[in-house]
Image 1 (cartoon, rainbow, N blue to C red):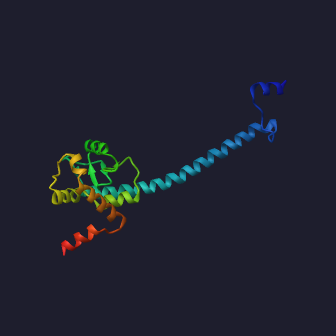
Image 2: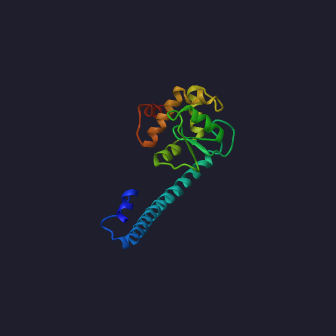
Image 3: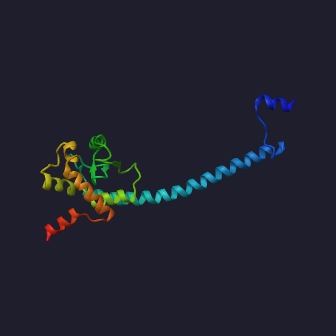
Length: 182
């Protein structure tokens, strides 16, 4: 009768576990998996907490000199355009997202995780550096429309220059700028 019920249900107990020990075996397996998952999660949490603390410290330091949005007079920006190295308010971050990630890759200062390269881009950039570069090279003002400002050829050159600085490489344009300073 037991085997007929197993066939009807389509269930079979594992052949290597005796019937009386089946529950103990499954309980041991569940406990083992539970412990393994929690040990791995704790290790990852410790690593993530250290990284998050370091990231927040770096961003807090950088935020002191970037206390206003790069595109409008709003204070205390909580967002950043990593590709341009600028700090943004919530409203302007939405506009930047609509420009596409190739023009402006937007991250939250508090909610997103950051890579070393992204932190380095923010360290090398800054609202004043970006706006003064565009003002000097293209005559584009601080409060110009975002699409005009960030899709210009000068903004593209600035992004490339910023990327090279963050990566530690030098381009021909950087050499030209250094020669002009001398």
